[in-house]
Length: 106
Image (tube, one colour):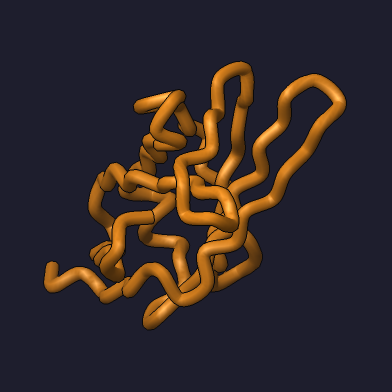
């Protein structure tokens, strides 16, 4: 994720950038990986169907959420999990309290 908490309004289409870094702070190369993202929802988990590599060498994913998906997300500070797979290798990256979801004003 970016260095700051990202905000989502329920019911809006939204794109999020998620950065993956090594323990030393350098970028994790995600070349060859595919990913899914799972968010905390009001009635169970919300899975984002669209996760694409934005910058492989920079470890950056682009997660696209539809209005229906953001509407189903849990309000308040919430977390999500990015599962990355490359062949038989699976890595799970957790982003704890990295999003703030607010209700739509409309």
